[in-house]
Image 1 (cartoon, rainbow, N blue to C red):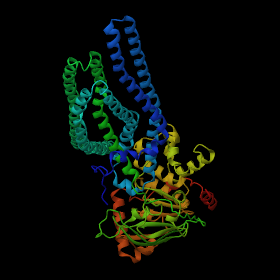
Image 2 (tube, rainbow, N blue to C red):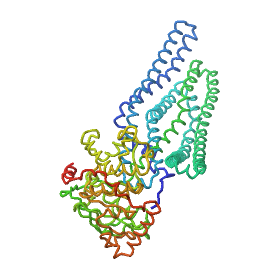
Image 3 (spheres, rainbow, N blue to C red):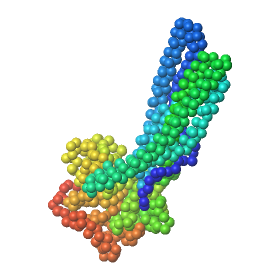
Image 4 (cartoon, rainbow, N blue to C red):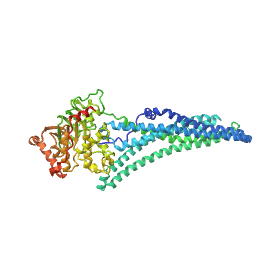
Length: 632
């Protein structure tokens, strides 16, 4: 399967209004305060529009009549209007800030919850940087737009409408001249939307690609340094950054173009209106006070008109952010709880594959299924090893019991119940997994190991007992030598630990979950031969009461199993004991020979010292433990 990234996607076919309307369920609780914030902003704008009216009366009365008392009262009126306007501006911010951050919180937590619920196949296709940029940048942009852009866009549009009507109050010729000259702004806005909308989408997608590059470089810094490829990574990053820079420049040019018209046309309107006003005044159709008031009103309207370009670009950025966020929300979740729930009544751990097929979604019709009809049954308490050459489907098979992927044909049964008929919560309580690539979280050792035991207080007596038992099975006693023991916070992805230490903690995590079925994808590959022998001895005690499916990449792992299943080209071609398969299957002998050669190349061919295997084995899991776990 190839991994792809959904970058450079076209804008959705929805109109900007309908696209942004999809935010309504998140914004609904905040609407009352957002409306109050908008009302406060509108009142502030109306108070600003009242200034020219007061100025007209001051010019016509106190100034024309040289009345000091009238001038004082006029000045006080202007002061009161200014104080009220400032109060309304403060009220706008007070009303909108808290609810907009709550909307941001709700969208972000919903987005994260969605990421957790979407299947592994989704994460295979999407770059982590794309998801991160949506989670952080796009959602933050929506918060700023709701608190600032949306409110001011609506208020400034209404202010322009009211102000345009007031322009006709003094003379129809002045109002008509001003509006006709500014009318082309609507066409400029239409052209701007077409250009800027596309560039905004490109910019945000490219920012996501850039975030992916940074994340990959940071996570792979050891590899880059070891191979001296830092310069190569920098060149790749610089190319992507340069592409983003060019896109941002094109965005800036588009914004600069709309600003050019937003500034130029009102200035032309001012000049023409001045000429018309002078003519009307000379003709006696307009007095001086009215002319002064008209230009004061036009000046007040200048900022709302100039701000439209910025607010319109903000609107389009928000629309693009909404499209990008809902691309994740709209992804189909194919692995969900069933409509009709079933439960396991006899939780012994019998695992059955019946004609199981699997193929990735992007596989072509000409390709065969990766798993091409698997029939396999594991008895309760049995340990079965999976062996096969690279590409035979071993790892893919281990993802099916826990529904990391769903079969595309046939079915997987747990104690006679199709795993798709169980809730994901119950299924993943009963099926535990440990992977070859051990992933740990930036939490304490205790929290990492007890990750699958939400029923326990990690620091309770029972939690401590489960923790110590799991660490003992995994031979992870090294944790007591860490600075804070089991409460030591390990670094991001556990990279502060060695590969073998990470694998032992991952194995301890799977053991601590106490599942009825344990799926192990070669979890001991990074261990030295002596530690591996100790872990295998402990696992024999654990697996005595647990059904286990183990992917084996070394002969020592095969020896851990009761039976072995041989995979060849996506099919199980032989099942039996190791000694029987060596005698009857030429392909099995070839596979085992390949495993032995690989073990020798990795320095794992030396047999362990039996004297080092005398460490006490943690107490065996009992049927009673499984019964308690199944009841949970």
